[in-house]
Image 1 (cartoon, one colour):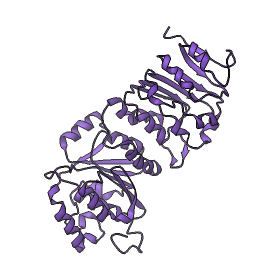
Image 2 (cartoon, helix red, strand yellow):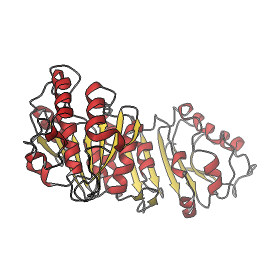
Image 3 (cartoon, rainbow, N blue to C red):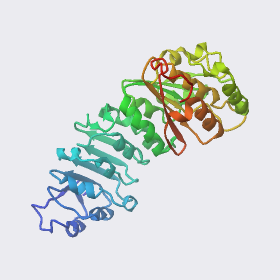
Length: 378
Protein backbone atom coordinates (compact mmCIF):
# COMPACT_ATOMS: atom_id res chain seq x y z
CA UNK A 1 0.00 0.00 0.00
CA UNK A 2 2.97 2.31 0.21
CA UNK A 3 2.52 3.32 -3.41
CA UNK A 4 -1.17 4.08 -3.06
CA UNK A 5 -2.07 7.75 -3.28
CA UNK A 6 -5.29 9.02 -1.74
CA UNK A 7 -6.53 12.53 -2.35
CA UNK A 8 -8.30 14.49 0.38
CA UNK A 9 -10.27 17.18 -1.39
CA UNK A 10 -13.07 19.37 0.04
CA UNK A 11 -15.18 18.92 -3.11
CA UNK A 12 -15.12 15.11 -3.04
CA UNK A 13 -15.47 14.50 0.69
CA UNK A 14 -17.98 15.49 3.33
CA UNK A 15 -16.32 17.54 6.01
CA UNK A 16 -16.37 20.82 7.78
CA UNK A 17 -14.32 23.10 5.51
CA UNK A 18 -13.19 25.18 8.46
CA UNK A 19 -11.84 22.12 10.26
CA UNK A 20 -10.64 19.16 8.16
CA UNK A 21 -9.06 17.35 11.13
CA UNK A 22 -11.84 14.74 11.69
CA UNK A 23 -11.59 13.51 8.10
CA UNK A 24 -7.81 13.54 7.99
CA UNK A 25 -7.61 11.52 11.19
CA UNK A 26 -9.44 8.71 9.36
CA UNK A 27 -7.23 8.79 6.27
CA UNK A 28 -4.00 7.35 7.65
CA UNK A 29 -2.64 6.68 4.16
CA UNK A 30 -3.20 10.16 2.75
CA UNK A 31 -0.28 11.12 0.55
CA UNK A 32 -1.77 14.15 -1.16
CA UNK A 33 -3.53 17.03 0.56
CA UNK A 34 -5.24 19.55 -1.68
CA UNK A 35 -6.47 22.76 -0.06
CA UNK A 36 -8.25 25.03 -2.55
CA UNK A 37 -9.43 28.11 -0.70
CA UNK A 38 -9.53 26.24 2.61
CA UNK A 39 -9.11 27.87 5.99
CA UNK A 40 -7.14 25.63 8.33
CA UNK A 41 -6.93 25.61 12.13
CA UNK A 42 -3.49 26.19 13.61
CA UNK A 43 -3.27 22.57 14.77
CA UNK A 44 -4.15 20.94 11.43
CA UNK A 45 -0.73 19.44 10.85
CA UNK A 46 -0.91 17.34 14.03
CA UNK A 47 -2.57 14.62 11.97
CA UNK A 48 0.79 13.96 10.36
CA UNK A 49 1.98 12.52 13.65
CA UNK A 50 -0.27 9.53 13.10
CA UNK A 51 0.51 9.01 9.46
CA UNK A 52 4.05 7.65 9.68
CA UNK A 53 4.40 8.44 6.01
CA UNK A 54 4.97 11.41 3.81
CA UNK A 55 2.76 14.05 2.33
CA UNK A 56 2.39 16.00 -0.82
CA UNK A 57 0.86 19.31 0.15
CA UNK A 58 -0.69 21.32 -2.67
CA UNK A 59 -1.80 24.88 -2.16
CA UNK A 60 -3.69 25.77 -5.30
CA UNK A 61 -5.45 29.13 -4.85
CA UNK A 62 -4.66 28.83 -1.17
CA UNK A 63 -5.37 32.08 0.63
CA UNK A 64 -2.10 33.88 1.38
CA UNK A 65 -3.40 35.21 4.70
CA UNK A 66 -3.87 31.64 5.96
CA UNK A 67 -0.17 30.85 5.71
CA UNK A 68 0.90 34.24 6.96
CA UNK A 69 -1.02 33.66 10.17
CA UNK A 70 -0.18 29.98 10.56
CA UNK A 71 3.17 28.35 9.77
CA UNK A 72 3.16 24.95 8.09
CA UNK A 73 4.49 23.24 11.20
CA UNK A 74 3.57 25.25 14.34
CA UNK A 75 5.40 22.83 16.69
CA UNK A 76 8.30 21.40 14.74
CA UNK A 77 9.59 18.73 17.04
CA UNK A 78 6.16 17.11 17.47
CA UNK A 79 6.37 15.77 13.92
CA UNK A 80 9.22 13.35 14.46
CA UNK A 81 7.68 10.61 12.30
CA UNK A 82 7.35 12.75 9.19
CA UNK A 83 10.30 11.72 7.00
CA UNK A 84 9.44 12.52 3.35
CA UNK A 85 7.59 15.69 2.37
CA UNK A 86 6.59 17.14 -1.00
CA UNK A 87 5.45 20.75 -1.00
CA UNK A 88 3.81 22.34 -4.04
CA UNK A 89 2.79 26.00 -3.83
CA UNK A 90 1.04 27.26 -6.95
CA UNK A 91 -0.68 30.40 -5.73
CA UNK A 92 1.57 32.95 -7.46
CA UNK A 93 0.15 35.99 -5.66
CA UNK A 94 1.40 34.58 -2.39
CA UNK A 95 4.96 35.75 -3.11
CA UNK A 96 3.88 39.38 -2.91
CA UNK A 97 3.22 38.95 0.81
CA UNK A 98 5.84 40.03 3.33
CA UNK A 99 7.84 37.55 5.40
CA UNK A 100 6.39 34.40 3.87
CA UNK A 101 9.72 32.55 4.05
CA UNK A 102 9.70 32.46 7.86
CA UNK A 103 6.78 30.03 7.80
CA UNK A 104 8.60 27.44 5.71
CA UNK A 105 10.51 25.83 8.58
CA UNK A 106 10.43 22.06 8.37
CA UNK A 107 10.55 19.24 10.97
CA UNK A 108 14.16 18.36 11.72
CA UNK A 109 13.78 14.62 11.05
CA UNK A 110 12.99 15.01 7.35
CA UNK A 111 14.97 12.66 5.11
CA UNK A 112 13.44 13.58 1.73
CA UNK A 113 12.14 16.99 0.74
CA UNK A 114 10.59 17.89 -2.62
CA UNK A 115 9.69 21.53 -3.23
CA UNK A 116 7.93 22.98 -6.23
CA UNK A 117 6.82 26.55 -6.80
CA UNK A 118 8.79 28.09 -3.90
CA UNK A 119 11.43 30.70 -4.62
CA UNK A 120 14.83 30.08 -3.08
CA UNK A 121 15.46 33.17 -1.02
CA UNK A 122 18.32 33.25 1.46
CA UNK A 123 15.94 32.45 4.34
CA UNK A 124 14.44 29.49 2.49
CA UNK A 125 17.89 28.03 1.82
CA UNK A 126 18.93 28.44 5.44
CA UNK A 127 15.68 26.86 6.64
CA UNK A 128 16.45 23.80 4.51
CA UNK A 129 20.09 23.77 5.60
CA UNK A 130 18.97 23.20 9.20
CA UNK A 131 17.80 19.71 8.23
CA UNK A 132 20.84 17.75 9.38
CA UNK A 133 19.28 14.38 8.49
CA UNK A 134 18.25 15.36 4.98
CA UNK A 135 19.34 12.77 2.41
CA UNK A 136 17.63 14.03 -0.74
CA UNK A 137 16.43 17.43 -1.90
CA UNK A 138 14.42 17.86 -5.09
CA UNK A 139 13.66 21.34 -6.43
CA UNK A 140 11.29 21.63 -9.34
CA UNK A 141 9.85 24.42 -11.44
CA UNK A 142 10.82 28.02 -12.03
CA UNK A 143 12.24 28.85 -8.62
CA UNK A 144 14.10 32.02 -9.61
CA UNK A 145 14.57 34.92 -9.88
CA UNK A 146 12.84 36.52 -6.94
CA UNK A 147 13.28 40.14 -5.92
CA UNK A 148 13.79 40.34 -2.19
CA UNK A 149 14.77 43.16 0.13
CA UNK A 150 18.37 42.15 -0.60
CA UNK A 151 18.07 42.32 -4.38
CA UNK A 152 17.69 39.54 -6.92
CA UNK A 153 18.82 36.12 -5.76
CA UNK A 154 21.11 34.76 -8.45
CA UNK A 155 21.19 31.08 -7.49
CA UNK A 156 19.76 28.52 -9.94
CA UNK A 157 18.20 25.27 -8.73
CA UNK A 158 21.12 23.33 -10.23
CA UNK A 159 23.30 24.50 -7.31
CA UNK A 160 20.86 23.60 -4.55
CA UNK A 161 22.76 20.42 -3.68
CA UNK A 162 25.88 22.49 -3.08
CA UNK A 163 24.13 24.66 -0.52
CA UNK A 164 22.85 21.64 1.34
CA UNK A 165 26.12 19.71 1.32
CA UNK A 166 26.38 20.45 5.01
CA UNK A 167 22.94 19.14 5.84
CA UNK A 168 23.72 15.81 4.23
CA UNK A 169 27.21 15.25 5.65
CA UNK A 170 26.28 15.76 9.32
CA UNK A 171 29.32 17.96 9.85
CA UNK A 172 29.39 20.88 12.24
CA UNK A 173 29.62 24.30 10.62
CA UNK A 174 32.29 26.71 11.79
CA UNK A 175 29.68 29.39 12.40
CA UNK A 176 26.17 29.45 13.84
CA UNK A 177 23.07 30.03 11.74
CA UNK A 178 22.53 33.63 12.84
CA UNK A 179 26.21 34.43 12.22
CA UNK A 180 26.07 32.96 8.72
CA UNK A 181 22.91 34.96 8.05
CA UNK A 182 24.71 38.26 8.60
CA UNK A 183 27.31 37.56 5.92
CA UNK A 184 24.79 35.87 3.66
CA UNK A 185 22.58 38.95 3.64
CA UNK A 186 25.43 41.10 2.34
CA UNK A 187 26.73 38.45 -0.05
CA UNK A 188 23.35 37.96 -1.73
CA UNK A 189 23.07 41.71 -2.16
CA UNK A 190 26.51 42.05 -3.79
CA UNK A 191 26.91 38.78 -5.68
CA UNK A 192 28.39 38.10 -8.12
CA UNK A 193 31.34 39.74 -6.43
CA UNK A 194 34.88 39.18 -5.16
CA UNK A 195 34.94 37.37 -1.82
CA UNK A 196 38.18 36.71 0.10
CA UNK A 197 37.99 34.16 2.91
CA UNK A 198 40.77 33.50 5.40
CA UNK A 199 40.23 29.89 6.38
CA UNK A 200 39.09 26.78 4.54
CA UNK A 201 36.49 24.48 6.05
CA UNK A 202 33.19 22.66 5.79
CA UNK A 203 31.42 25.95 5.06
CA UNK A 204 33.65 26.83 2.09
CA UNK A 205 31.42 25.22 -0.53
CA UNK A 206 28.48 27.19 0.82
CA UNK A 207 30.24 30.56 0.48
CA UNK A 208 31.53 29.74 -2.98
CA UNK A 209 28.10 28.55 -4.13
CA UNK A 210 26.25 31.57 -2.84
CA UNK A 211 28.67 33.79 -4.75
CA UNK A 212 27.58 32.30 -8.08
CA UNK A 213 29.52 33.70 -11.06
CA UNK A 214 31.70 35.66 -8.64
CA UNK A 215 35.20 34.84 -7.43
CA UNK A 216 35.68 33.31 -4.00
CA UNK A 217 39.27 32.77 -2.84
CA UNK A 218 40.33 30.90 0.31
CA UNK A 219 43.63 31.33 2.16
CA UNK A 220 44.54 28.42 4.42
CA UNK A 221 47.56 27.71 6.62
CA UNK A 222 47.27 23.90 6.69
CA UNK A 223 48.33 22.06 3.51
CA UNK A 224 46.79 18.79 4.65
CA UNK A 225 43.48 20.52 5.31
CA UNK A 226 43.54 22.07 1.82
CA UNK A 227 44.08 18.61 0.34
CA UNK A 228 41.23 17.12 2.40
CA UNK A 229 38.67 19.81 1.56
CA UNK A 230 39.56 20.25 -2.11
CA UNK A 231 39.56 16.49 -2.61
CA UNK A 232 35.86 16.54 -1.76
CA UNK A 233 35.21 19.86 -3.50
CA UNK A 234 37.83 20.36 -6.25
CA UNK A 235 36.10 23.48 -7.60
CA UNK A 236 37.24 25.59 -4.63
CA UNK A 237 40.04 28.11 -5.26
CA UNK A 238 42.35 27.74 -2.26
CA UNK A 239 45.91 28.90 -1.61
CA UNK A 240 48.36 27.91 1.10
CA UNK A 241 50.07 30.50 3.27
CA UNK A 242 52.49 30.11 6.17
CA UNK A 243 52.28 32.75 8.91
CA UNK A 244 55.33 33.89 10.87
CA UNK A 245 53.61 35.09 14.05
CA UNK A 246 52.62 33.56 17.37
CA UNK A 247 49.60 34.44 19.42
CA UNK A 248 51.73 35.44 22.41
CA UNK A 249 53.19 38.26 20.28
CA UNK A 250 49.81 39.97 20.10
CA UNK A 251 50.32 42.62 22.84
CA UNK A 252 53.63 43.70 21.31
CA UNK A 253 52.22 43.83 17.77
CA UNK A 254 49.21 45.83 18.97
CA UNK A 255 51.55 48.34 20.61
CA UNK A 256 53.63 48.62 17.42
CA UNK A 257 50.51 49.14 15.31
CA UNK A 258 49.33 51.94 17.55
CA UNK A 259 52.75 53.58 17.83
CA UNK A 260 54.27 53.40 14.34
CA UNK A 261 53.29 56.12 11.86
CA UNK A 262 53.87 53.66 9.00
CA UNK A 263 50.89 51.65 10.25
CA UNK A 264 48.58 54.62 9.74
CA UNK A 265 49.39 55.04 6.04
CA UNK A 266 46.97 53.52 3.52
CA UNK A 267 48.73 51.75 0.66
CA UNK A 268 49.06 48.45 -1.15
CA UNK A 269 50.07 46.05 1.67
CA UNK A 270 53.03 44.90 -0.45
CA UNK A 271 54.47 48.41 -0.25
CA UNK A 272 53.64 49.07 3.39
CA UNK A 273 56.44 49.66 5.90
CA UNK A 274 54.20 48.67 8.81
CA UNK A 275 55.43 45.47 10.56
CA UNK A 276 51.82 44.23 10.68
CA UNK A 277 51.34 44.22 6.91
CA UNK A 278 51.48 40.81 5.21
CA UNK A 279 53.41 41.19 1.97
CA UNK A 280 53.81 37.62 0.69
CA UNK A 281 50.29 36.38 0.00
CA UNK A 282 49.57 34.99 -3.47
CA UNK A 283 49.36 37.88 -5.94
CA UNK A 284 45.62 37.35 -6.35
CA UNK A 285 45.06 38.72 -2.84
CA UNK A 286 46.56 42.09 -3.77
CA UNK A 287 45.43 42.43 -7.38
CA UNK A 288 41.70 41.85 -6.84
CA UNK A 289 39.45 44.46 -5.25
CA UNK A 290 37.48 42.55 -2.61
CA UNK A 291 33.82 43.26 -1.95
CA UNK A 292 33.70 40.98 1.08
CA UNK A 293 36.44 39.66 3.35
CA UNK A 294 35.83 36.95 5.93
CA UNK A 295 38.46 36.49 8.67
CA UNK A 296 38.09 33.06 10.27
CA UNK A 297 41.76 32.05 10.19
CA UNK A 298 44.56 31.45 10.91
CA UNK A 299 44.22 29.44 14.11
CA UNK A 300 44.54 31.46 17.26
CA UNK A 301 43.26 29.60 20.31
CA UNK A 302 46.67 28.82 21.89
CA UNK A 303 49.78 30.90 22.51
CA UNK A 304 51.98 29.03 19.99
CA UNK A 305 49.51 29.32 17.09
CA UNK A 306 49.80 32.14 14.50
CA UNK A 307 46.84 34.28 15.55
CA UNK A 308 45.03 36.75 13.30
CA UNK A 309 46.86 39.96 14.20
CA UNK A 310 48.44 40.62 10.82
CA UNK A 311 45.51 39.26 8.83
CA UNK A 312 43.14 41.75 10.45
CA UNK A 313 45.48 44.67 9.81
CA UNK A 314 46.13 43.62 6.21
CA UNK A 315 42.42 43.16 5.51
CA UNK A 316 41.91 46.75 6.64
CA UNK A 317 44.54 47.94 4.16
CA UNK A 318 43.02 45.94 1.31
CA UNK A 319 39.64 47.50 2.01
CA UNK A 320 40.89 51.08 2.30
CA UNK A 321 43.16 50.81 -0.73
CA UNK A 322 40.48 49.73 -3.24
CA UNK A 323 39.87 52.19 -6.04
CA UNK A 324 36.28 53.03 -5.03
CA UNK A 325 33.27 51.67 -3.19
CA UNK A 326 33.40 49.86 0.12
CA UNK A 327 34.36 46.48 1.53
CA UNK A 328 32.39 44.48 4.07
CA UNK A 329 34.76 42.75 6.49
CA UNK A 330 33.58 40.01 8.84
CA UNK A 331 35.66 38.92 11.83
CA UNK A 332 34.75 35.64 13.50
CA UNK A 333 35.61 34.81 17.13
CA UNK A 334 35.40 38.54 17.83
CA UNK A 335 35.12 38.03 21.59
CA UNK A 336 38.66 36.65 21.82
CA UNK A 337 41.43 39.08 22.77
CA UNK A 338 43.18 39.34 19.39
CA UNK A 339 40.06 39.46 17.24
CA UNK A 340 38.44 42.02 19.53
CA UNK A 341 41.37 44.39 20.10
CA UNK A 342 42.86 44.27 16.60
CA UNK A 343 39.55 44.58 14.77
CA UNK A 344 38.41 47.51 16.89
CA UNK A 345 41.68 49.35 16.39
CA UNK A 346 42.66 48.54 12.78
CA UNK A 347 39.22 47.98 11.21
CA UNK A 348 37.89 50.75 13.46
CA UNK A 349 34.98 50.86 15.87
CA UNK A 350 33.44 53.61 13.76
CA UNK A 351 33.03 51.17 10.87
CA UNK A 352 31.21 48.50 12.88
CA UNK A 353 27.81 47.76 11.33
CA UNK A 354 26.59 44.97 13.59
CA UNK A 355 27.67 42.13 15.82
CA UNK A 356 25.93 38.79 16.33
CA UNK A 357 27.31 36.16 18.71
CA UNK A 358 30.99 35.86 17.73
CA UNK A 359 30.78 37.61 14.36
CA UNK A 360 31.54 41.33 13.94
CA UNK A 361 30.69 43.11 10.69
CA UNK A 362 32.58 46.19 9.46
CA UNK A 363 31.92 48.28 6.36
CA UNK A 364 35.09 50.10 5.29
CA UNK A 365 35.08 52.75 2.55
CA UNK A 366 37.71 53.32 -0.11
CA UNK A 367 40.21 55.95 1.04
CA UNK A 368 41.47 56.46 -2.51
CA UNK A 369 38.12 57.70 -3.81
CA UNK A 370 37.20 59.88 -0.84
CA UNK A 371 39.67 62.69 -0.29
CA UNK A 372 37.71 63.86 2.75
CA UNK A 373 38.91 60.89 4.81
CA UNK A 374 41.98 62.15 6.64
CA UNK A 375 42.49 59.68 9.49
CA UNK A 376 42.99 55.91 9.64
CA UNK A 377 39.81 55.60 11.74
CA UNK A 378 36.77 57.89 11.79
